[in-house]
Length: 120
Image (tube, rainbow, N blue to C red; front, side, top):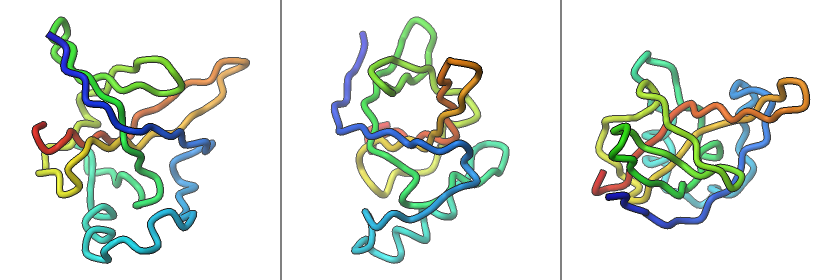
């Protein structure tokens, strides 16, 4: 059975995750939450970037393959195992940190980190 957790989804249009920037969307966010987000890392210890780089995600669990999928740009993308964060979600709703790269004429989304919802 697929579980769909509906949330707003936005898209990150960066050539590289290294170009992280705060665009002002979270200027009033609790500083302790901002610091917590900045400290999040994937299973390899790589940082997920910053508060402004994470977006609420439309998520489903795919029982056939036993993995999360997120909808980006109208299409479902499998979340890599190494990107799934296993820390308790202090935000409540699922969040994704991803970026896009151009390979020829094709846009490919790279999911850097994914934080399941509070029910995870």
